Structures are given as C-alpha cells and as structure tokens.
Length: 113
Image 1 (cartoon, rainbow, N blue to C red):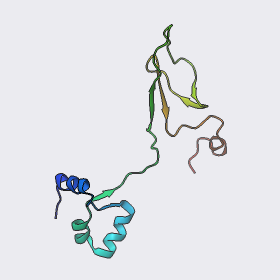
Image 2 (tube, rainbow, N blue to C red; image 1 turned 45 degrees about the vertical axis):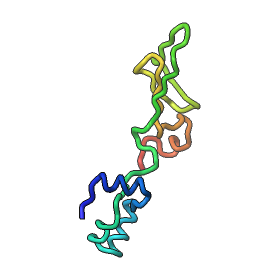
Image 3 (cartoon, one colour; image 1 turned 60 degrees about the horizontal axis):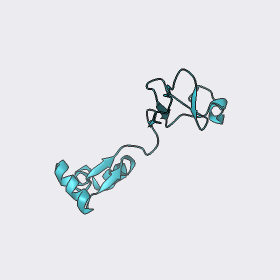
Image 4 (cartoon, helix red, strand yellow; image 1 turned 90 degrees about the horizontal axis):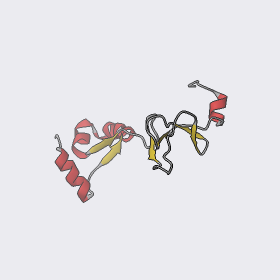
C-alpha cells in the first residue's frame, strides 16, 4: 500500500510514524516480509549524522572601520585552515577540515587507508 507524503506528515505530527534506519529495515524485512514492511514502516532514513565532505560554516564577520578585505593569504580559525577568497568579510570553514599539525595529517598524509 503506497502512502502519500500528506499521510506520512500527519503521522509525524501525531507521533504515530514508524521510522527505521537503513540497517534496521533489512532485519525488519527478513522477520516480517517486504509486504508487511511496506504497510507498517513509514520512513526509512539513509543519511548520516556525521559531517560530510562539503559540510561547513559560512561566516560573515562584518565590516570594520577602516573596511577590510580578507583573502590573499592564509586564514585560520583555532588553527584550522579556512577559506576567505570569495568576499570582503566572509570566511568558510569546512566541517572536516583539520589543523595543519593534526596527527591525522602526519600518519597517512594524503592517503586513504
């Protein structure tokens, strides 16, 4: 039985929604069958709570007097490299960025093992 987004949203509002993650649905289907899973389970999540490679924070630090222009050199926030080459007073810091001297950059620099 197909469910509409409206039906699922209503179950979310009332607290009656059944949510499983991608790993949980496998065992649920093994135990109950795919037909029952389609009837009973409303949402299957497939995302992660961990930072992704493109996650980050875009920070506007505001202008000062005299006006400033960031960029053209190195920018760090708490020893973590950040990027400033796109606007006068904006900084982007990646969620997965590491300090230059972080041990994870020294053991396997540039390698995925």
